[in-house]
Length: 400
Ligand code: PMP
Image (cartoon, rainbow, N blue to C red; front, side, top):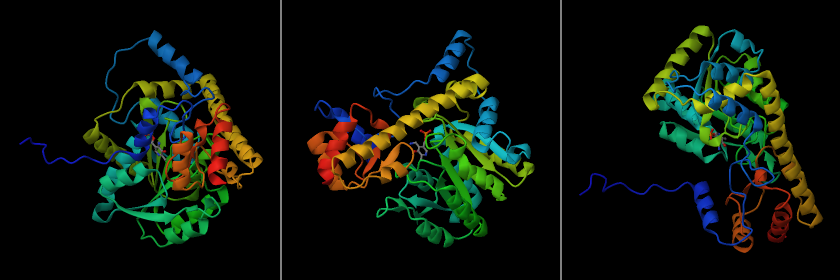
């Protein structure tokens, strides 16, 4: 009998499973709105020219590949802190932020989860929005957290149930971690405005909850600084401790390079130093140290005034195209006499909770070869001028 005979088949990832079904579909003109990536007008992953320029310079001056420090490339971490917290942040001047390069935003979540579990001990609890990105639950459950949910999405308005959110968070035990999406909430596209962030932060502070901001789409809603509003308000609030996980997968279109970072804010310089030592210990026990290439690309862009300006422009082009696709989709649906989809213009980022039911999503797939998630989540960034009419006509047909 094999040592592994008792190993059971783990359930597949639902989103990747949908892509497999899509790839196996032989119908011409099939469209995949189930993805979680930004695709350009031509249906391709963009290779950002700013990134390309750094890559070519790196290749021209090829260097040997030593190990990076456990917490990654120092320039990358410094530039990340400036992008996330703002270059003039008093938190940075006070040395209160411990930042480490991680294997994507997912790596930051996992390293933080392991570390926070150590701090919180047996009773570690985390509250996650309902709904949220599926991997949030997996990562924190695997790290030993008890998972709690707070109300977030209101199906009736296709917007935020802010009163429900505050009520649920107000009942949490002090010390509970509260996972928040910085912007472009995945899967709903529903975000908090500035006044709501302020109210939320006051509650987190009063109830002594630990804010944990996941920022995977910085720059996809309104711009790199505006999209960090939640982080900036937390920094200004006087809250002593909070956590930020950020990712460059989308904002630099560097999905496969796995570039992200974990930043933990402590009460003072000494606390931040202790946090950094623990982050390094956790990384060491998981994968020892991160990889060089993706971080070199990001640091190369962010570290050059000229390339950084070009990157902001390239990011702005992705953002504008998403906005144009949202508006175009809503207009076309209205012209076709479909029920009101105007809420899609109020949602932000790559995703929209379209309000389509599971039955409608299945009709889209079966009758029109258009793929969306069963939850009704569509990737607005997978729309383009060539498929917009087709998708709008199909959505109008199934929602009529
Ligand atoms: N958080 C959220 C909300 C995400 O949507 C994603 C990516 N889908 C991540 C984190 C992880 O990003 P990365 O690919 O950099 O691991």
